[in-house]
Image (tube, rainbow, N blue to C red; front, side, top):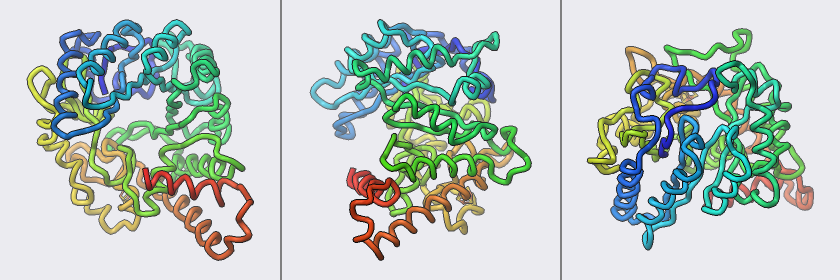
Amino acid sequence: MLKVHQRCNLACDYCYVYTMADQSWHDRPILMSREIWSAAATAIAQHVTTHDLSEVQVILHGGEPLLAGPETIVAVTTAIRTALRGTAVARMAVQTNGTLLDEATLRVLDRNDIRVGISLDGDRADNDRHRHYGDGRGSYLEIDRALRLLGSPRYRSAFSGILATIDPETSPVACYEALLKYAPPALDFLLPHANWSTPRPARAELAHPFGDWLVAVFDRWYDAPSQETRIRFFEEIMNMVFGCASRSEDIGLSPAVVAVVETDGAIEQVDSLKSAYAGAASTGLSVLTDTFDAALEHPGIVARQLGPAALSPRCWPCELHPICGGGHYPHRYRAGSGFRNPSVYCADLRRLISHIQHRVLTDLNDRGQDSAAHIGGGSMSELARLPLIASSVSG
Ligand code: SF4
C-alpha cells in the first residue's frame, strides 16, 4: 500500500488517520516525491525477485490519493511496472473517497489499467452522517456520481468494489441494498476501528450490535436467488468453516501480508494500527535504505506470523479461534497489555461466525441428505454458494 497523498478533502468522523491515536500524518510530506516512489518501485522489484513472485498487488492510498492528481498516479504506476518488467505483474488499484473521480480522471486510470475502489456507507443519510466535508456538508452526491460513472459499461472493468464502514444505528438490509444499486463486483464491510482503550460508541442495549447487523446482511446476501455481489468478509469466514486459510487481515490466523509505504518512504505495518497508539504501525525502516524482508524481523510483524501462538490465552479455549483468529489485530489493543487480548468485537464476531457456520453446515447437511431435491433449485444458499466455496478453495 503506497500512501501517495497525506491529506484528505473529507473529514469523516471515524477516520483512523486523522481522528485516532497516531497523528504522524501531520509531520510527513503531503505528496509522495518521485525519489520515494522510485525507491518503493525498486524495493518491490527486489522483493518480487527474492521470492520469485509472479504477481504483486499495489494499492494507491491516502489521505485521498486522487489529490495527488492523475499524472502522479500514472507516474507511480509506470515506475512500478517498469521496475517489474519481465518478472511479475503489478495489479494496480486506487482506493478513493470518490469525490474527485470525474470522467477525465477515470479515463486516465482505466487506460492505465488501474482499478478503482470507492468508499460509501449506504444511502445519502447513512453516508453523510459520517462521511462529510470539514464544513459538515455530506459527500454522497459526489460519490453517487462517481459510482454511476464507474458502473457504466465503458468503465465497469475498472470497478474493484465498494468499501463500507458499519454503523449499527443504520438498517443493515437497507444499507446493503443501497450499495447493491451500483452493482459492485465486491463489497467490503468494515468494523469501525476501536480497541479496549478506545471503544466505539455502540448501542449499549445490544450485546453484539455489529454482529447482529452483519448477520442480517449475511442472510439477505446468502438467501438471494442468485449471487448479487461478493462480500469478502463473509466469503473468508465460509472458506474457513471448511478448513481453508483466510486471505484477509480482518479475520483468521493467516500471516500479515501487507506493507505500507508512507509519503516519506517509511515502511510501516498495516495502516489501521494507527488507531491503537502513536507509532503503533512504525517499523523504523524506509524504502530509501531497507528491504521489505527487513520488516519481517520487526517484532510487531513477527507476532503476526505466529498464528494461534500470538493469541490471547483467553482466545485459546474458544472453539471459534481457528476461524476468528482474535479478529483484526488493531482491535485487540489495550493500553498496558498490548495486543494479547481478545478482539474488542469478540461478542460480535462470535455472533456472526456461529451464525455463518450454522447456516452453511446446515445447508451442506441438507444437500448431502437430499441432493436430488436440490438439483435445479438454483437458490444461492443451496447451490450457488457451494461452487463459490469450491472455486475459492481451489483458487
Ligand atoms: S476474539 Fe473472541 S471469538 Fe475471537 S477467538 Fe478470541 S475469544 Fe474467540
